[in-house]
Image (tube, rainbow, N blue to C red; front, side, top):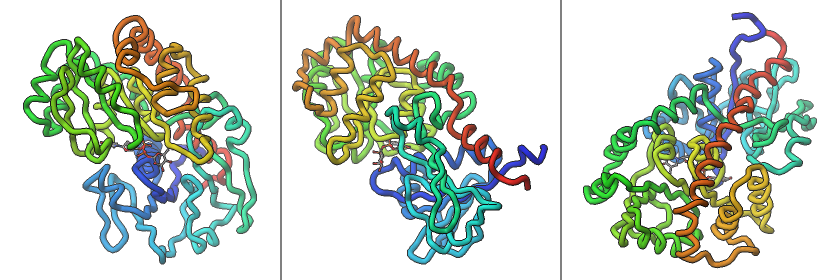
Length: 377
Ligand code: TRH
């Protein structure tokens, strides 16, 4: 290995604001840098319980731990005074400890802020801009994104080929469903040859009633999987042709496979949107709500990046309660889920994943950026 490509090391700081997206994105990035680029990673966390929900074996003792070759550090009120590694990656402007920042040296360290994901145009103009900080070190804004000129999306090597192999063999999905501890009637429902699988991962305010009614009355049987804690008012059980089953959170790798297995993925936040995109199957995004309805602009920007059928775009507006939306009825859902719109939606989902996979992935872009700026070892 030449000096120019020698693996680097990074401190990755994660603060959990809520839910699982903060830790979900950081864990994927940490793994990607460690596994695929050989970087030594120290992942700083303020909420080890959020990590444990995604990875039960990732435990810490006295604030420190090891997981898949990475170091874990509990980021407490009194963080350990550790010498910075080559790169400081601050996720979502989470403010690394002052004692740590004071030890960053611009001659040897690089400081990046990993930003939230957005498809808005302005992102391309801000990606990789530096901003000089109080400690005299420039902080570079690293924007993930869907557009050329952004930092791209997390995508591991071979991901789409693994997905294709999985999707070519329905027994893979069946095997996975058997590991979820679903009740026997849910599994039996899935065994019907034309059964449809839907994953439901949304925020509590999602307008579920019309969808549930449509699926209950649809000719095609549906198994809807709902992770524990999601849509708490929704009861597991049988509703006409719809079977709803709950399951415990699964590890990220299994979550990907669940998304690959489904006909339709109802996802939310940031990371599950990207992973559902890679599934290449129709998805509906419940976007994280923000003040002043800023999320609706983000949603519109994302919709404008693709060419989803107009009826599907209306469903996105309705699902997210956009002002232009109407109360979606069971009838409008059924026209979406069967017939020509459904065919178009499937084709477009496949096309979008292939198209986005042409972009260099986020970790490779980050590694290249650091290689160009860090002094050789
Ligand atoms: O959980 P989210 O809603 O997370 C976030 C946070 O709210 C964050 O503050 C906000 O900024 C962001 O959304 C936009 O949704 P997300 O981003 O999809 O993260 C969920 C993570 O949980 C993702 O990494 C996938 C993972 N997951 C599993 O690994 N197994 C599971 O069974 C499930 C349901 C999810």
